[in-house]
Length: 294
Ligand code: GRG
Figure 1 (cartoon, protein in one colour):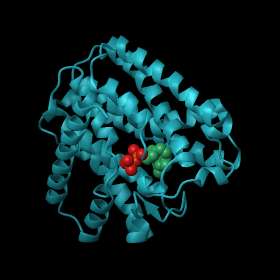
Figure 2 (spheres, protein in one colour):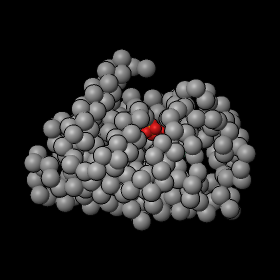
Figure 3 (cartoon, rainbow, N blue to C red):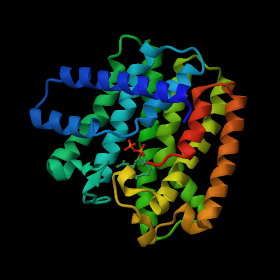
């Protein structure tokens, strides 16, 4: 991987973990709730969404202080979605990132409430950030609510659950991923650039870039479920091979899925050049996400 990107990602992770510690330390809440929130927040993970937000901000008028609360809020919402996704009523998983899932470590009620707390506190975090103007707070909260709510990730999750009963076509699969995974990635890219004062035209090209980046992320996720290393992934592979659910390799074959990913990579790169961010960490992140092994 590109050395400059490795350094950038490491720096962003350090800042995120520090902010996480500070925020959790300040919370005066029941211990079991805090432990459950902290368990999943600090369970590792690639921290891809905060890194994307920072990379997008760095591509324009970089302002590290302004992005901190949005980056953590985004990781909190991502973490809540994983906790709830793992519950018996949804995917019923025992392990996530090589560790027991939240409801296995604590109990179902605590896991549901930890997820609820992470979701709601993310908005409180942005609303209380003294680095942001009132307009920026309202804009960010609006964007984050819409990306994670019934017109975004929640819609994607329900469509995904329906697709387990009735296999989706390629077009339906793309729509599910655009909502379930893509909406939060799009928030990361949009919020970073918005706080970096990108123009409306640049933001519109970035929307297209984010769309293709989300699809690249998902094709690779499907490919890893077939060809990935369980050690690196921290979970068993083959979960989607056994069921009826549509995936890129099932619909297109392994080679076809690789070819489709390459088409998305080229489209993402073109959109990024048009957004005026040809020479940016975002450009390096395209190949990183496309070739990730976990
Ligand atoms: C419960 C409303 C609700 C939504 C859940 C994100 C999600 C929606 C479910 C996760 C299931 C899943 C495996 C989705 C595929 C893509 C994805 C989001 C993977 C996890 O994201 P990573 O790889 O995770 O960025 P880490 O562990 O690195 O943070």
